[in-house]
Image (tube, rainbow, N blue to C red; front, side, top):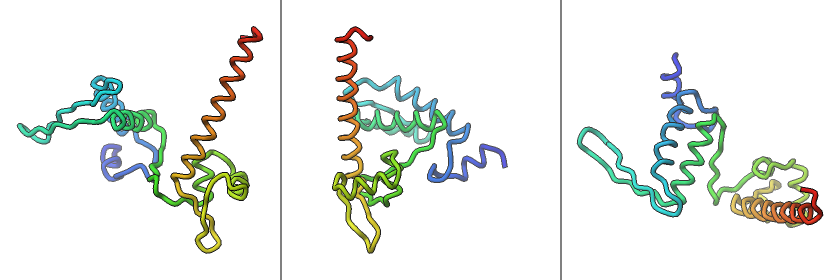
Length: 158
């Protein structure tokens, strides 16, 4: 089966990486949307549904930037996973999301750094709580790095 047919039969990226056809289409669409997108303004698109039938679509800035991020991932051949904020994650899924080891995550849970509940004897973490922890952690890291850079500049090291 050629790549065109193969890509047509695979409806999503839940268990595969983007094909060459996926990457080319994503890059083309990303280029079109990026050309029409202005910061903090809605992006207006006119789609041709069939000959003579059009649909006007307005993307909010958040939706346009999210779509561009998704298309950038597909266009570069990277895999991705969409996680609804209300999803409940296993400890392994959460560790993967946070890019930490599962034992480290268990320590964070035991230290009450991230809320969780048990389903039987298994821990479950709300995706919303994992995202909140990641954002807080990343913000703290950025602040520390900025302070270190300021100190280096003050000392004339950079």
